[in-house]
Image (cartoon, rainbow, N blue to C red; front, top):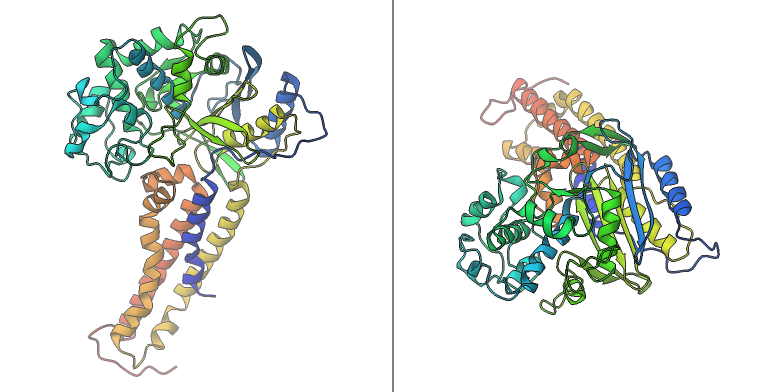
Length: 505
């Protein structure tokens, strides 16, 4: 078995990540169970506690509603600082924030202060990009993520992070567009940075202040705030990453979050948010923050482009059973969140876990079980894919390192076998061993390509630690073999331009 054969599985492992990350919330079974499962506090507790026990999930908060009624809110496990999770524990919900930002913009549309299909620059002259087509981007296109911006044209999470919305918009002056505005959907956080800045400028109030006054407080979400960076989140957004069947606490790097992924909230407040979404903009206390028509519009994908499921801060689709699902997920490197609305039944589900993206898809897995429960089916615990995949990666890592050690020890024999061969042929034989090194150096980009998001190698160590270790171990092994063989070639006089000498076996 050759070292390059094992190390070639880096690409396959990354492909597994892409395939497993396509569906944010796994489709629930469409076959009704005869168990007679009921969506109530006891059933929710039983399922989530079972999930925590079987998967080793450190902590989660859950909110379940039906119509105007709160079915259950609760916390499970503990935070990274060791505090017990409760329904009042404040956690970051990442991109669930986009629906809240969208509602703030839509309030201004209702008030006649913003035109949904007017160019953004009409209200925000400071919004300037390198591509002149930016002047055509409408407010609706920002909110539906069809502006023509995307992560590969402007990789915001790989750049120096701004401190304010004004700075975030100003930093886009050199950014290109990747498509004509309105022509295609591409998920991109800066769409919502610009939308939040628009709220600031049009309303004349700081974005966080506007959200608190016009969205959170009217809905009774008194423990909810919007912050500008992960550094302002509880414990600095410190959470956990999954690796090799266990969890490891890690601090989150500083990311700018306002507008796109900066809301911090609780299970209790998420329940209030879900009730308002299923209730046409009206809270359980009968306070209205938007018209039913406006809320319905935020749940409805645009007709152009025709293939998008992204509405205005929400995605809408039919699952395998044909049920309408409105949802959005949120991912930080150390936390995951999912909000789901089932309009046919009026059920709302929100889950936030303190495990990070990709390898720790716990919020999606818990949501899948709770959706089953809402349909009267008995939910089953589906463990995160990494709990199985990491075992495979661990075995491959050991194999790659073992083959690397073997290659180093046998470098002398390999060099002797080059006797009489042209130097260029020897170089060609070494070239395949550079591939694992290149794959490791570009791992962040390769993984990001499959997830349609630009990323860095450091971020990969959060998103899927076992994959990063495998790629790093393979690169180290391959590099060591190249060096050892190069030294052996020089030692035995077989390097390029060296006189060949006969060496007895």
